[in-house]
Structures are given as C-alpha cells and as structure tokens.
Length: 484
Image 1: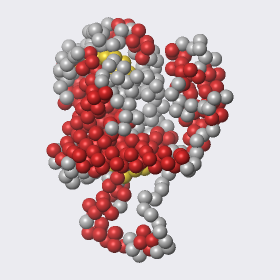
Image 2: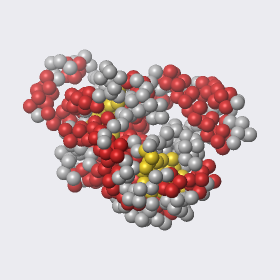
Image 3: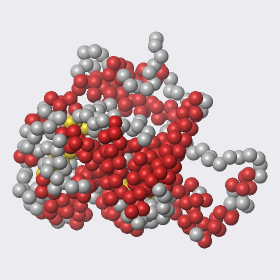
Image 4: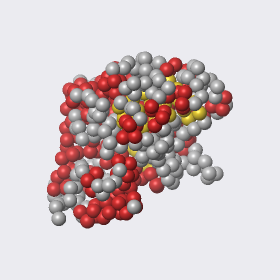
C-alpha cells in the first residue's frame, strides 16, 4: 500500500468515483468531523505550555522564581507597563468565550467551546507568532439566561495578565454589549473575531471580487442574508469603506431590516440592528425574491446549508454576480450549485473550496500588529487597514474568479497585516510604542517563522507524533459508510 498522504490534499480521490459533487462535499464534511474527534483524542487537545527561557543549572530556579523574581514583581508594581517587557504579557492573547454560539452548533455549554478556542490558539501561534490561552467561562445567571456583564467583568479582571483579548462565539445580542463596553473600558485590544474578524476578511474578499468583476463599491447593490454579529459588522465596515447604505438590504430571521421594523426599535439590546434599519432598504423591500433582483453581491452568514440560498435567487442577480455563502460547517448553497445558477464569483468559509473567506486570515496578523505596538484598542480604521493589506497580498499573486483572497499557507499575509495594522494604530494614536513599518514586518515575520520552525522541529524529533495512517484511513471509511 502506498504511504498515506498526510497533507490530505487529494481527498476527493478517496471517495467512490460515482459520488456526485454534492455527495463528495457532504462526505468531506463528515470526514473532517470524524477525523477531528479521533485526532483530538489522539493528542489530548492541540496546545501545550513550554518554557521560552533556558535552564542551565540549579541556581536558575532562584532567578526564575524566588528570590530573584521579586525584583521583577516590584518593578511592575511601580510601573505596570513594564509587564509587557518583563513577562510574556506583550505577546499573550486571552481567547474568551461563553460558548453560547459555537460555529453552527449553537450553545455548546461553557467547556464545549474549548476545542474551538484551542484551535484559535493554535492558529494564533502558528500563523501569527502569538501565544494564546483558551478561556471558556460560565456566563449563566442561574435562571436560564446568559449575562453579558459577567463576561465584561471577567475580561476586566483578567486584563492585567494579557496583551490582548479575542472574544469568540458569544451569542447576540450579548456580543454587542460585551465588545462595545470592553473596547472603551479596557486599555488593551479587545477583538470580537466573529464580528470584526469576519467583517475584515469579508471586506478584503469583496474588494478583490469587485475588481475581478469590474464593479465599484459605491455603486453595487448588496444583499446581506443574516443579521448576527458577523453581518452587522460587515455592514459597518462596508459603509466605512465606501458602500452606499441605500444600496444595501439586510435580512434577519423575521425578514428585511428597515424603518418598518418596529420590533427591532422596541428592543434596545439590538441597537446595532436599529442603526442598520435607519440607513438601509429605503424602498422597504420585504422579500428575498425582490431583494435579489439585479443584486450585484450576496453575503450570507445565516445557518448551515445547503438549500438555504435558492438557485433561483442567484439566477435573478445582475451579471457577474458575487456570492459569499459563509455559514459553517456547510455553506448556504454549495459553490458548484451557485455557479450553475449563474454566480460569477463564489466564496465560502471552507478551505476545501476556492476563495476561503475565513477570519483565520485576519486575527493572527491583526492581533500581532496590535501587540507589537502595545495598542490600547483596535479601531475600525485598523480593521479596514488589515482588509486592504489582505486584499493587496492577493493582488500581487494575480486575481481570478477562483482567487480573490490569499490562503492561510501564504506566510507573507500575516506579517504584512501586522505591519499595516500597527502603522494605523500609530496614526490613530492608540499605540504605546512607535515602530517603523519595516521594524514591525521584520519582528512579526521572525516570530511567525520561529513558531513554525519549532512546530516542524518537534514533529521531526517525534515530540509531536504523527497520527497513525490507519486512523486517517478508518475515518475516510466511516465517512463513506455514512453516505451510503
């Protein structure tokens, strides 16, 4: 038997030749879930803590701990900012979640989100050269509801230990209050990846999709399907980057947003949606059929598909239409079906299809840039700078309908983002440290390459063991059986 391909590059060939495109897509979804379960059991999670300082003899314990470390403690006591230099705080991110909105699975219980948060910590280290800790917390008020104030209080209490905070998988409307409060009240960057991260990467993809289609941001008609943290933030970034709100129609689970939505106006917790109601859909369009007629762009972040977005809706769009269907783990319509319906450019959140619009392309570089200049916050300008940085990296490679955004294995993406975010932080006067663009890029690149090198070296030395090939093959067999 040939050696198993650990890169998993040619998975389509692992399935029976009579499988249709949809069957292969479904089988891969099953496979990824089955394999994820087996691999996580094999490794016992994805992250570990290892020293970064050398130990050269017994007395080094006296330096790293007592009595020597007392000098470090008193120095930081007298100048808290010294903690960024004398400890790992300056390169450490807290990934905080109450796990109430985990990917497409909803409320998974506080500890149920640990797999996702460990995954973000893995990406943070390997792609961004940042250390990160998964912190899944219980925000329940004991009466069947989740209290956003508990998350706010937790982050503020933990702030002295971290250089930045990545909020994740917090359900709406709580996510709005948590982010907006912490952005103003903390003195380190607080980033909500479901909102700002998805918004940043979506904007990057759309910038380039419009270039390929020969269209202009200020002129295109845009339909946003779904009105959660992701799409409401995408709307805000689109508006800031030149889109006309009057050309935008957004849908939530009850229909279109607009001045006709008294139910939204009556609930002050949904203030982000209230703002969108006031600015968009001036003609009071009510149905998806009407909204999609002549639309140039569809951005769907709603519920896992397929068959959530109908082919006939795409058929009614303008020529060279752009369709982003980014629900996880299954897009609202499969890319091949969207193309058959007439879409010119299709993007999803998955890496096994072309044009992966996934926030993993954003947060490692963005937070690295914020950390390097010790930013107090991440402004919308910094997010937009990251989007244009990401888009520019793809332009240099050459755009096409199947390549509008870089992939996660293009290492230059992340130091470039870090550079552009850091420089914008300096311009926005939220940086504590001033660095040149080259200094940021070189430091970010060094840290990222070091993180990758350490990982590869540990694999070569057997400290990270390869999962047995039979485990991978068995997962493929199970996926095929489940499709039969």
